[in-house]
Image (cartoon, rainbow, N blue to C red; front, side, top):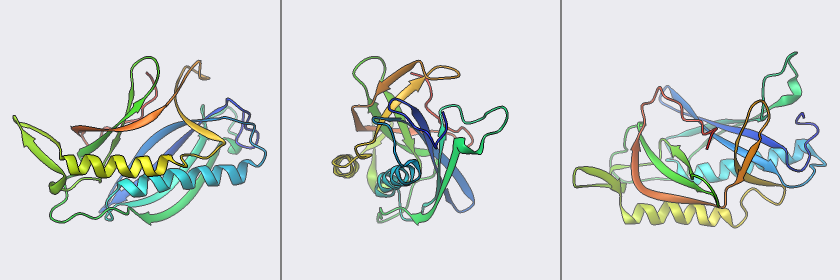
Length: 207
């Protein structure tokens, strides 16, 4: 498989790279084609745009979404094949603004990836939260109800169109090709606040 020849059922990986004040990080998504893709160049650009639309709605306007890379499930080939990777530049700011101080990048918004069977997955988003979004109860930090409603509303609004008719979010595992592919049936905001060291990248690859 290459990005020039994507068939129904093929899985690709999308990574969204962001930065703020000298720090950069990324979120990872696994996406499955639901049809044969007749025009991959257009379809991949459209897919990238849809993912950026979701991330811009969640991230603070101090976070810059730099670029999106989309690759085949196994991005590295021997010999190297440039048709397994595409890069889409953006340089766009997040759309969320909050009053007061923002929280450090180590404080992550936790979004659950719901599936029919097996353990749910998770997405951890840095650069989304301010102090007004959280409260401490019983010595634990959690999201305020207003913040949960905001983020879930943004996701629900986005989900009306989602990734379009050609793609769907999945969780895939297997090596070198995916042998277990589970459709993601929804994205649910958790009331938990997750602390993740900045030098530990979180890429969800196995259930």
